[in-house]
Image 1 (cartoon, rainbow, N blue to C red):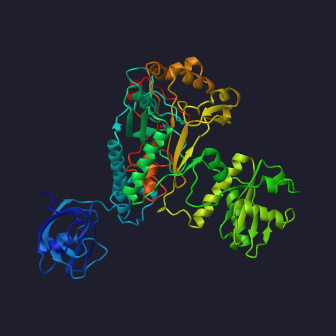
Image 2: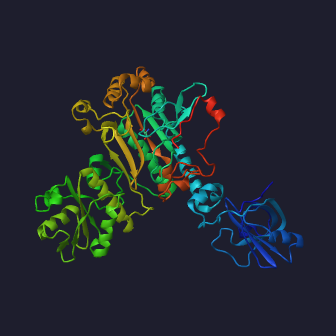
Image 3: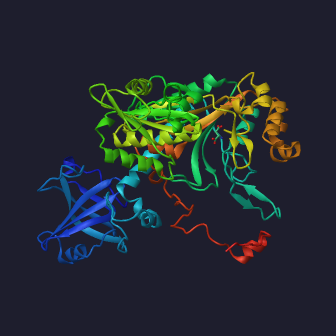
Length: 584
Ligand code: ASP
């Protein structure tokens, strides 16, 4: 028996008990005649005591020599502490050690194993196993476990079956590049790692599986924007014989359950918003509705004056910043610099101060009188004391820029409280989106998403206008899940591939198996997938997903601990019939 108790367990009620503990040396304090050691394991910290009077000399010497992160086992008696530590669950007691065994020594760790460590991100990732000993990371991993357990419980109780689908597959388009794996046995051929189990879960519906879920790794080779991972985890779900309402209810139920069990937050009904409204009111398809600051479109009231910038713009749009009239000129200038940064890309900003006496003072007073500005305030919902910030330009760009400003200001105003949860369904996404680079339409969600009933005709005349049976679940300004009702008719699926620019041969080569399956009685079906990493991070009140992933990759897609990716040797290449053609 290595231990009778763990390091977070012992209380005053255990005083006089003989115990055996094992763990890591967090730190030791040597007063000469007395040595205290903090012993740590996953469960907590227990103080050990060695002193001249009661500890044999030889053991005293070994206790003095214990280094940080040594792995030790001790036997001893639980005694009452002279000075108690109310901040520690075991703070009432200490262990008077009678036997000390060093199980393993440790090199001095490259950073301190404390909640606030001196190790930078890259260093902590290189020694991630040490990082995991720290409370914030350990607790995040345990929190993730709780969330996944709750997901499994809830879905299993609701009749969902967890089915594993393969990782070595053929490409599934989810809008990114595939990671590919060469096949040794099939010379010159490659598997793709799944960007999602999309086609497999649809085939499970054809297979009669009815209600499926899987907590599953997905792989997407994209340029890593901040806080993305090339491999990430989804809670992937699919249901047959359902309509959109059934799906929304099922997964709203799951999310509600998680908020309640994990966060103790009860939310009755999740609001719903059309995609078009989300874009109009928040300039964003994943609006953070924990706070207002809704957009007010100002074309009607701000154009046709003498201000050319606005007159020439496709959209003039503003927000009211609560209390923003208190900003100094310098602060406003800084804000303007902020939105002009290349990451946001606005050309400038017009503003109007709403004074307490009901008058206005704007940066464009030359063109707009008090009545005009009163209309700006009305449209943006600004009150005396607020600041109206106005951007103009091409609709999509301006919306994105003002959305960035809205989020930034809300952050500065403390309106994005991580302990407040505001879920939202965003519905009726466009089916297709125009891609400037390839000058073609792409499926906005994926090519298996069905258009809204009655909109097939519109596909021929005005494809950009067609709406899809597609929905996203948004939480605190993050997309935590998304899905759609699928096409289950072979002809319509073939038509869809055609619109997306696949020749019939290409469609057959890539998705023949799905089209074939659709000929054997495919039931109506649909589903969605949650991004588990992000969901866990948000429920955990954090912005970054890395701490919730045991062994994450860095922004270059590298695992700096195991040093991957890495070259393979020539024999392996030969076996795979591969020849490198490196650019550098
Ligand atoms: N496969 C989709 C995705 O990964 C989700 C879905 O449509 O169910 O985003």
